[in-house]
Amino acid sequence: MPDPDTAEAAVSGFDQRVDAMFRSESGKPLVRAKKEKPLGPGRGNYVRAYSYSMVGFAARCLYLDEMLDEANAGLAENAQHYLDNPLDINDRDSFHWHAEIVMRLIEMYGSGGSKHAGRITKETEALALKPIWEYVRKVSWLGKAEYEKSKTWHIYLSENHHAMSFTVCWQFAKIAKDRAEYRDLKYDDGATAAEHYRAWNAYFVVYCRERARKSPCIEMMSDDYNSTLIKGFYNFYDFGDPQVRRSAGLLLDLYFAYWAQEQIDGVQGGGRSRIYFYNGLSQNRNHGNAPLAWFYFGIGKQPTVCGHDTNAALSDYRPPAVVADIAIDVQGRGRYEVRQRPQGLGTQGRPMTTAVTTVPTEMRTDGGGILRYSYCDPAFIVGTPMTEARPLNDWAAISAQNRWQGVIFSGKHDARIVPTVLPQDSRVANNAFWSAQSKGSLITQKLKYHKRGTDMIVWMSKEGLSAPVEEDGVVFVEAENAYAAVRVVWGGYKWMETELPAELRDRLERLAPAGAFNTTRFIPENATMVLNEEYAPVILEVMAKGDIKSFDAFKAKIKGCEMRMDAAILRYTTIYGDALTFDTSFAETPSINGKRVNYAPQKIFESPFLNADYNSGVVTISKGTRKKVLEF
Image 1: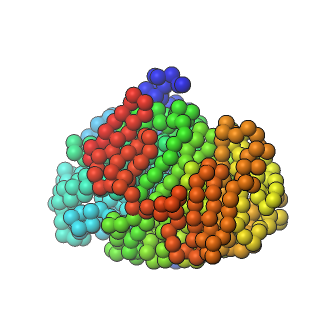
Image 2: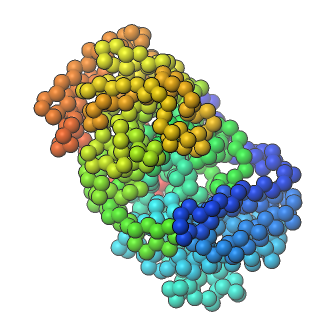
Image 3: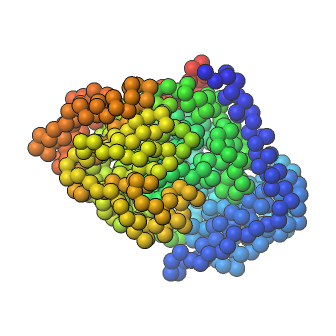
């Protein structure tokens, strides 16, 4: 058992860890990231990384009280770039990714700063606000902050874009309503900053409550996008009115509990969406939730200073000890199941390449559609988003895009097995598979309703797994603390024995973390099973070594599992003794031990650590003697 003070110590170590990160780069000059060309015709320049480099540098200097002239010059240069390139202000992939960080620095270090007033000069402050005004006067309108009808489930652009955008709109209105040069100006909708501030305050409180009632993330467990989703919420927490601050704190507590119970040493398990193909093959240990795991829980390694993570690093928010306990005590969590009811059904909007998108995606919250299920053991986490076999048009794209399933294993390597559908462009496929899972046993099949899918494959990491061996048509592998088996129900498979397609190889080499996917080797170093029949079901079985005598005993148990086809119905008894039925014609809902999968359960969160009834807004986080009830 871990020391009882470990959780509290992890939380209290936040300040020391953040200070060490900033001080490790003390005195280093500004290194500007490259300004990239537009991502498409008629668009602004792609300068997200450039702006992150500028605000990250400024944050470090302002925090350390060093190189203040350079920090002010960097913020001024960044602002002037957008004023000189107005298309960049309204491009969805550049400006609103960093604008709320600029305003945080003004709130902390500007002329009226709450931390160290005056480190940002009045001249820099005034200049930095100018492009933000040009953004919000077009992008913020009172109707967008409506919540009586939408309940905040009208999503402009994608989920993380929507949150970044309304964060910028709220925070600018908060600042502008008290500044002489802005308080009397009218937005394009004819309203003032004070009116927008009141509207966004009310909206955000409802937004937080709805996420507690109906699920925090449509982009389910998407490591990069979820960390981007929440990065502006720290500003609501630090600078908002009491009710806004309280709502932000509760939502952040919920998010980190949601994250903590389905990770091992910072590596995320469980069913997900919006995981681009190459991101599903390994865990990025430098970006996404990784810096937050280090800030709050001491998991992983010290990150470099990055603009993306500045709000978290400078915020007063700290997770409660019960969340830290869940995050760091993998062994103490034991073995358990996680069931969740995320939102995914909806009417797709018309997202633009600009931030001004007027037709949102309208999420349906009156039904089910998805049951996120994970089976968690200290040795592994296996999970999937169990979905109804629905046509693509039933789903919001942010839910259907790049769903992920599979198993991650504990140990020093990023070991995993990923049954998935290979996208045509090696990047994006929508509504690609459906599945059924009970405990460590998963059945999955490519969906006929997919978009942009090609082969059904089973990808096995080189690191952390033994070379796969086939016996009686079943492929077996061994991880450090678990065994796994993969069975193709009909048609067989072949190994991908040649180099990956050139487009996929090039993309992975550019975008995957260093060493995550060795594209120059052949099977079995990166063992990839390619099904001969694209719609053949795949069965994945995983068991901890502590539950069985040996690898040979595991193999024998797998071979003894009963499997038969009854017309289109696959009937299978798992290694855990559960009876699964799976309709390979997509007509009937799968069953587990005689009960149909319920895609709309009474609980929105159900596990030993995180529990809430659907639509209640009261969430309980607990572990051992620690407990916190979030009453939204």
